[in-house]
Image 1: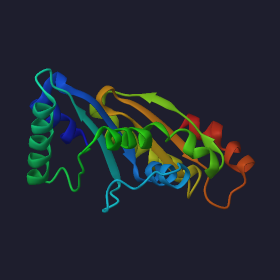
Image 2 (image 1 turned 90 degrees about the vertical axis):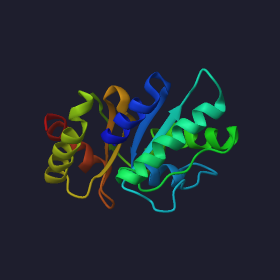
Image 3 (image 1 turned 180 degrees about the vertical axis):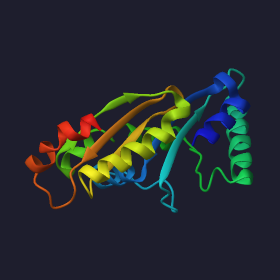
Image 4 (image 1 turned 45 degrees about the vertical axis):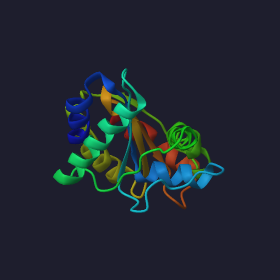
Length: 179
């Protein structure tokens, strides 16, 4: 996802008005618990990006820019699937998926929540190390990771493993926070 962010900034500069990344489990929770929500990509990738490009010239210019970004992304292998909003309604539906990720965790049980800021270049390393630490402490936890990659702000939330009691999950909060 960092390579896609770099490509988007190279092609659109300040026209990159949103770059939200979301883990597969975050999308699963949201589509499961949000009325009318649909999976946006048939391939169901491990990571999703909500990329928004704006242009002071025209909507057509913004569209051409995002198409250029995606074309190069496909050609270089950093994009595996994509869909472009074809209407304001579809754009709103994409944003609703992202906006509902926080509350969509509630029906899944206990969640240990974190808002973390790290340098953008360190996000992949943080995710790798944090995921491994969580798995050691609370095997089977569902990591609901999403955020504003453009500024290194992550919502790194750990939902209880299926079959666990909420109290058992919350008992591990100090160890998870320390890790």
